[in-house]
Image 1 (tube, rainbow, N blue to C red):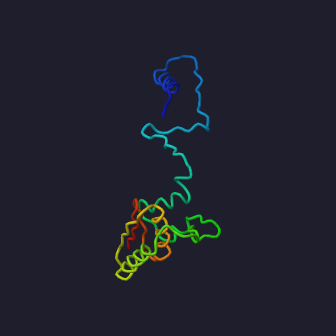
Image 2: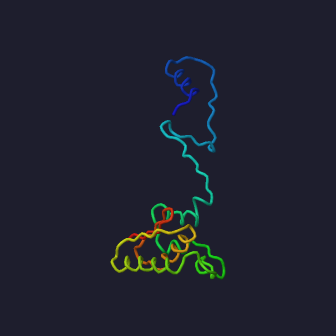
Image 3: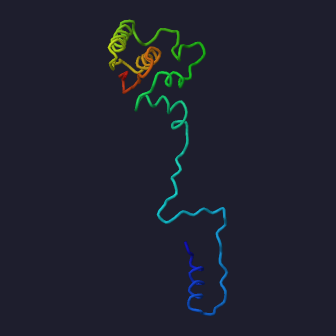
Amino acid sequence: MINAEQAIQNWVKIFNEVTEKIPIKTESPMTQTLPDNKRWPKKKPVHEFTTGKFSTIRKAFTTGIKSKEFLSALNPENGTYFGLKTEPTHTTKERLVMFGDTIGKALDRSKSFSFQCVNRKERNELVIVAATMLTGGWLIKLSDLVVRGDL
């Protein structure tokens, strides 16, 4: 690309006009220029919500996540089982049996399953249980209070 000063000097050379020499300013090599049809890429802020374990666990709410990825992204405290405390849980024995039956039938038939939870704490517990039970090509998906497993 020709700047204005170079254009004037070319004009002078073409028409043999005698004028004083105009010094040409050159851009420093540190300054980057882009062609007219391009734009500078937008810089997105990098923070904990787009990188690391949070973004990995967020996949469970969007596209689904494999069990290994989900369990490795958890940051459990010492003395817990994948973050589940040894104290009484929020899931009753009856609900746990229902979830076990649902996931057992899905594994036997190699079909997807869906389980409606009562509250968020129960959902959080059951998704960890599902992640420890499901292997291979299963994807775990969460939406509101529903735990789903897709094959």
